[in-house]
Length: 180
Image (cartoon, rainbow, N blue to C red; front, side):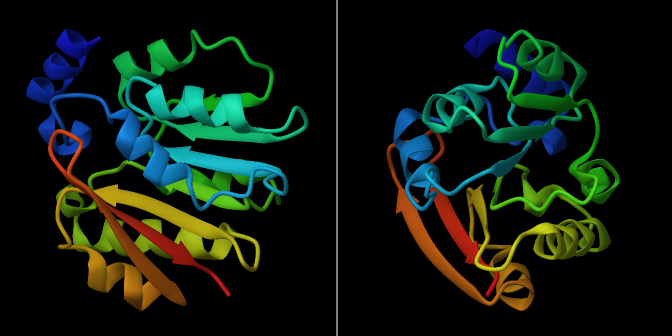
């Protein structure tokens, strides 16, 4: 898995953002603000090789849904090997979120998209469409390797908290963004 992740990074570093999958420590920090008892719909942007996807599915209720957006064809093929009726996978950009929600409103959006690699307009559109899609009291949870996008998050969401894990390659910031 590490070798294929590294290859995808070399092919398209702007899209992949890291040479290795997220660590278990990062995954734990990303998921700690999720109330899995009330989470009926979770959206995941940029699952890569699926390590966070698998953990989400382990913790989700049997009647919950996971909607995944992965634009990388090779990663998408890997995610499609996950055999779980609760997951719907789109081999498309997360910018197409509204097109696929069909009036469904997620409780949580989990993102591993490297925001720093997006154009300012794509970053703004992604964050605004995420905010609009979430239910009230919903959360957008994003990890990044820098705080470069912090102002974008603060300008979009009502409350943003920051966590950090050094136990990831590279170390990562976790932003938990609330829609009130």
